[in-house]
Amino acid sequence: MSDHGAPFDYHPLTEAEAGGETGWYSWNLVDRTRYNTAVLGELRVRGEGDRCRLRMFPERRHTNLGDNIHGAATLGLIDIALFATMHVIGSGNAGPSVTVELSTQFVGAGDPDRPLDAVTEIVRETGRMLFLRGECVQGEDVVTSYSGIVRKMKLRPAGKAE
Image (tube, rainbow, N blue to C red; front, side):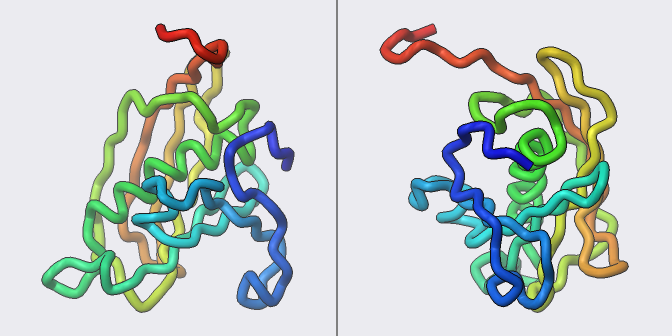
């Protein structure tokens, strides 16, 4: 895994920091006032062969009135997982790109007392597009299945508006 110069706090975690597991990296924005970290909290990422696993640790603020993980928190995790996958196992920087499409099927309730993992694979990557699919899981329990398309954007020169 390489850094690709992304604006992420992307560094290996010790086994102690990763709860006794190995191979995890921090996946948090350097600017912690932005959505990823400010709303979803601390995120962890690791590559698992041809898949990327992005983990969040739900808190009460991520729950709905039924005391399950709110669908919006799950959708936020999935959207971030698309870019984490592009960065960790794809060929591109997870930087200036946009989600073109996201299709999600909620198939189970998320338990706020267990980590929620978005496990994503790349179906196809072209020069400008990335086609992905995955599942949000808690252990063997599937919470959502999803597919998405990301369009990779060109870096804009500093000071130039499009």
